[in-house]
Length: 375
Image 1 (cartoon, rainbow, N blue to C red):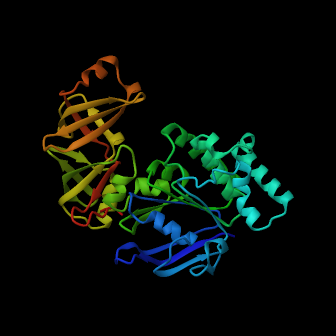
Image 2: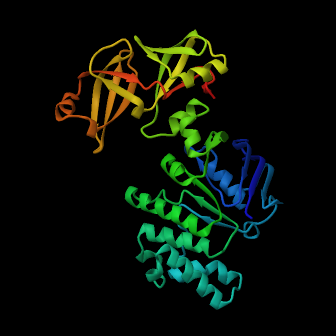
Image 3: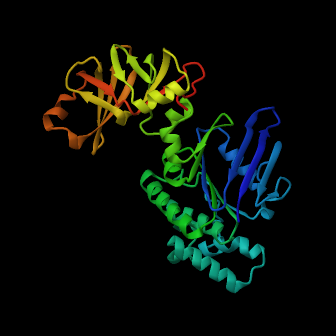
């Protein structure tokens, strides 16, 4: 078993700066949990408190039911992979991976067995006699992961392990971490600022801002049902379009939304959720993801005119950057396979286009609290 429980955990630095506020989370055995958020949100600080590298100001941290607040990092039975690899340049790959086992006086045969097994899993067997300077960034990160693997720890902590890699290698390593998780079958806590990593790796995602948890949920939950405006904009690429709108309640379970001069119908399920929360007519903050914006051929009551500012050809899709009559900027994603050559040619900068929003994919937020109105 390798459960982790954080109860009312808080971190305050000497200058009274609160880095983490009242953090509460239960992590199940063999679960892969990702802490994600912008720089300075407290995610790495929280991970370091779990590891014992940062002192806790308040609260408790338990690993397998044991409070570890006062235990040294070496006594917590955790393994950690850092952003900068932290390899010893004068040691071979084998000796780097074996270093912690040597300190524990593990028998030589067992050291050899653990290191070679980890190297085989990570595909670095041929590099065991090389020094780190002879390896690429991705190979060095594999060594750092292997060094953590051989410790046979209860919990695997990873602090932005891919951030120093280029985009292509980062994608490849992300896939390798997914495979590694399946082979190790242990508890992972992973920190990243990259929402793509969070969405693809995590069983659950913990989204943080300014030291507070904003939402905890599966990738599907946080994407489809963001609890507030911050989560809605943070998860998804390109990010969600946000604009002011007017919500009209026409009757029981009957709502529509007015954006500029366009009157757009809302899906019945969303209407029912708005009614359940007794949401009345009034100003709202409306969210719509770029892939849920539909391009229309001509002006109609349910669409609005926009000016095309930038046309980005992304291969399988176009990203159209448009501005509405109020100066709000939006992004429209449209698959190129659905467009004729004539239609593509029509998307020239400065052109007027008409757009409407998918009724099942609108998000509604209170303009003051920024909380979801259909939570």
